[in-house]
Amino acid sequence: MSPKVVWVGFVVLLLGMSVVIQGTALFLANSDPSFAVEEDYEQKAAAWDDLARRRRASDALGWTADVSTRAGDRRGEAVVRVSLSDRHGLPVEAAEVVVETFHNARASRVLTDVLRTTGAPGEYEAIFEMRRPGLWELRITATRGEDVFLRTLRKSVLVGG
Image (cartoon, rainbow, N blue to C red; front, side):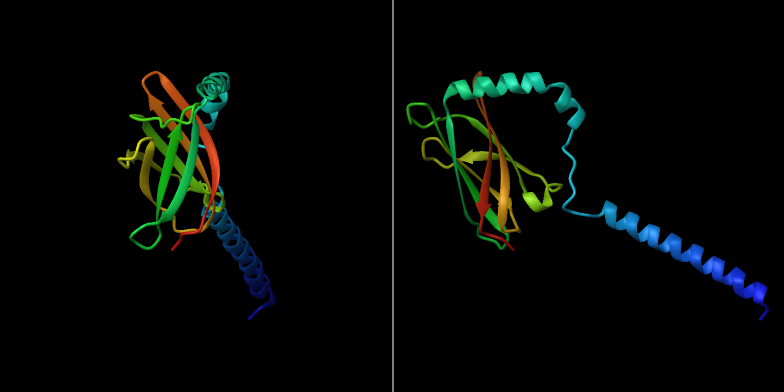
């Protein structure tokens, strides 16, 4: 084998290794489950003043949300219960309650559900697939008539898969 062929082969090998390394880096960068981008970020940023107004109106309602979790019937399930009360401590009934939740380490996987009433006044719940124990963010939106309550909570969830 001539030295010219060896050097050409060496250069081709180095270029090939570079392509493999860059391809691997690109794959890993795009498949990282802990990386997340806020959905519709540009629209949310443009509507920030409206969101601030809605949050002030929500705070003026004086409602509070208490969140509890427990293990569901199947592995990896958690029952999320939200108890809503008004400024006088009375239960907030007949509200539509929507929860968006995600684990802080896997923020790209957002779970959303409309909670159902439990039958107890002001109590709503749904089953979420919360396979990872740890800190979860819950974004609660409760609507009753013209009233809209917004709250973001962080809750340590012990159930998992």
